[in-house]
Length: 229
Image 1 (cartoon, one colour):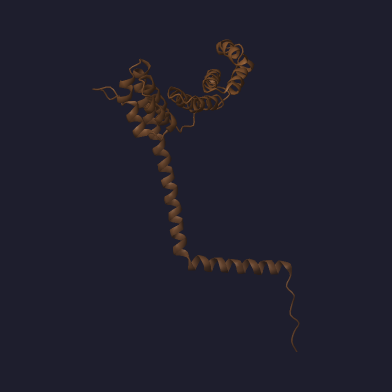
Image 2 (tube, rainbow, N blue to C red):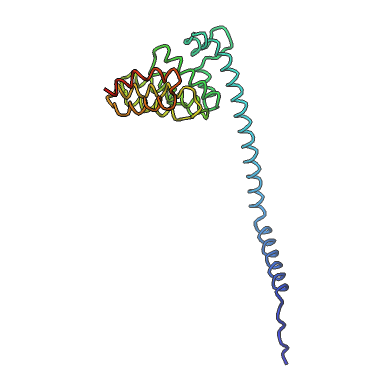
């Protein structure tokens, strides 16, 4: 006579599933040990490469910062051609060389702004525009400066509508930028030059509202007279 099969308890069922899972996992690891080992090695290599890359970037940025500090005396002294090309007979790299070697670092990106400014001061607006538009750093002050610099280049080409839009964009990069009223004023002036009186008035009104006590706030009054006539 067959005995009645014993009904397993929940605990026994759970234990049985765990044992089954253990043996399946063990079997998978045994069958795929070589592949798993390769994956593990790959992960380790990837981590090492990431650490190396981050350290290398930090070192490059530090080197760019040092080179930039060396050339700033030339820039601040108005020796823009030397600032661009470097000073003969010295170890001072020019801004152009700094950008070429370290352009992808934060300090290298900053060098682009000073390089573009230098070209601008020398009347080479096409070269200046190239580096203003190439700026890709993360510092808001320089983001706005790059936009405003490019705007000035477009204004020199009589593309006033484009210049106005870029000045307006520069004024909205950061609320803390002390140049914002100037950017808004130039946006309004270029809108006015392009024939868009309504947009020009919007810029001037914003200056009157937000920067009334500034020197730009006092200057804007004469432009408001023009758009209200």
